[in-house]
Length: 64
Image (cartoon, rainbow, N blue to C red; front, side, top):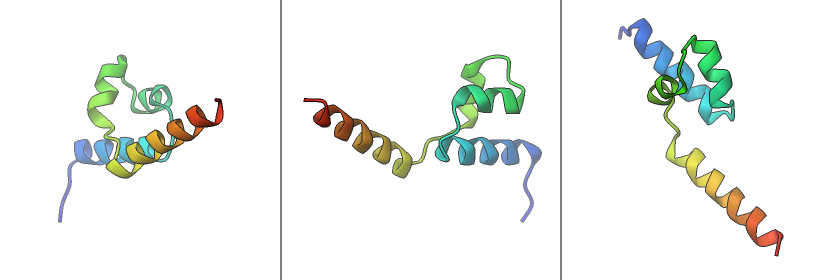
């Protein structure tokens, strides 16, 4: 199986964002001038999104 450099960049950005690395850091690492470009590269997995929402809910309910 072969892949392109472009596909590797997408995979790398996605791995970083799902590992908790900030978009600002990923933007810098990929050399993007605009964060909107980085947003097209880094895709948050369903698992990561669900975990983030659960954490937000816990923090919200513990502050009451």
